[in-house]
Figure (cartoon, rainbow, N blue to C red):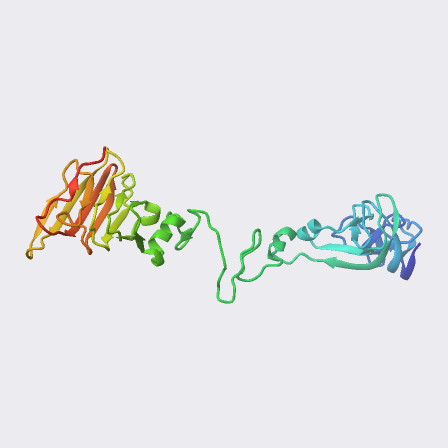
Length: 336
């Protein structure tokens, strides 16, 4: 039943069915509401209002209203196309400014007469805001400076973010659309990680790789020699620098290409121990191995060998070594 706190008589501008929401059509004249955007003022009482006749409209209190849809107690309710109650939805609010009659005090389904607390009002979409409720919710529970999946990014007090994952090729720098950063994360780390520029090797074997050793200085620290193997030459431009940190006293240190189809070009400067001269040696057309024996072909502490992946199946080498005894070429062809 209805418990009206404020009822007022109005002239019917058209027939208004009982328990239907109403709006003004003229001064002191009402008609049935026809949409959620209508300025709803109240609800028709227990008797229809005929066109041109006076009738009661409940403006405040508890009123009985006809339902057009499934409504749950506590829902805000507004009008359908003929003044019946429908629940206010997020979709409505996101699209237009809506007017509501009040709050459902009972749950209902289509055709029910149920109680509504009549407190007319309106909900306005903010001017210029096109975001849906779901889009606005991307800001909910966001911690400034912390990246959370499926949430908006908000910088911390120092304009910082804790962690941000960007796919390779997805970062652009510069004005306008910017220029895509083509380097991968691994490539950037190789170029910028100063904490690992020196790689120490004390094992008997070492397989060089672009990912681990490109742009680094590899220190060879094994007196019994190290067998070093280069990666396949593809023309990548990868550069390896090998520094002899411990003089070879037994066996040899060898630096070999990956397969028999690959060779070396370049030079070796063998500094003579008997004077202030050097022996300059060119890598031959079939050379694929550098041997440091700790004596006549280098392998003395302080020696440096630089290797560049210059083309498919071809390494450029720049060897600077010191020797004892009768200096000799460190180059040979041993890979089959």
